[in-house]
Structure formats: C-alpha cells, structure tokens
Image 1 (cartoon, helix red, strand yellow):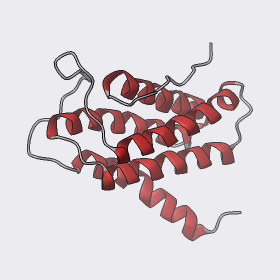
Image 2 (cartoon, rainbow, N blue to C red; image 1 turned 45 degrees about the vertical axis):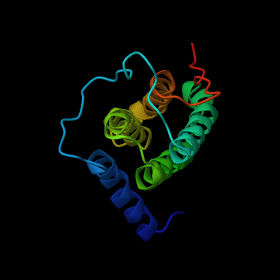
Image 3 (cartoon, rainbow, N blue to C red; image 1 turned 180 degrees about the vertical axis):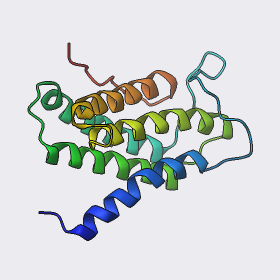
Image 4 (tube, one colour; image 1 turned 120 degrees about the horizontal axis):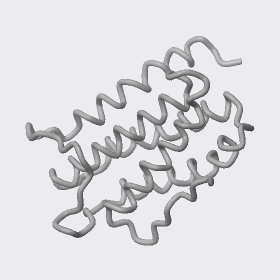
Length: 158
C-alpha cells in the first residue's frame, strides 16, 4: 500500500508538470494549435529529448497490449503514468530546442500529460486504457514531426 505522502506527492506533481511544460521556455510568442513540420522537414531534437521520448515509447509499447486487452491493473496504469510524467519532467528541465521547435513540442507534451491523467484514472476508470493510447499517439506524432534517428512508431492495437 502506498503511503498517503507518496500519493499526495504524486497528485501534486502530475498536473503542475503539464503547466510547467506549457510555461517552459515561453518567449511570449503564441503557441501553435496544430502540429506542423518545419517548412516540410522534421524539427530538430537534442539528446535529452530523444532520451525522454525513447523511454516514453518503451513504456507505451509495454503497457499498450495489456491495457488494450483489459488486463492492465490500477498499479500498471499508475506505474505507466509515473514513468511518463518523470520523462516529461526530465524533458522540460533538460531539453534545449529553438523556440519554434519548442512551441511544437509543447503540443506533444500537452497530449502526453492529458494521456497520463486519463491513464491514472482522473477522467474515470473506463478511460484508463484510452490514456495509454493517447500517450502512444502523441509519441507517434512526435516521430512524424521531430528528427529522431531510428524512431519506430508505437504499434497500435487493432
């Protein structure tokens, strides 16, 4: 059983990270509402971003099959949410992109954190598996819009 302090800490960290991610590197420019390419090319990345997204990819790839089959437990979803949240935190703290690429990344981060909230049951128990799918979709959108050598899309269940 988790301690009440650990639960409170987890709750306190999950939503502010989304806000932190949205505010990080804010240069007073409007944030785009739709993910786009950089004049037809993928946006540049750095080592911190690639490391965090690779870990998110691995977590989504591992959790998605059990979530889709209905066999994922609350503990599975909590561990998934904790891992993705930790990687987003790492990304926000360590990622150094140019402002335009950073603005595009904010859209990915928003989708990741929305998926985490769903997976953690904050939008109802029946939405937990959908949250894992949303994180996987955000990871796949990242792969389509950001230059990450060797990136493979998360395989989605049929």
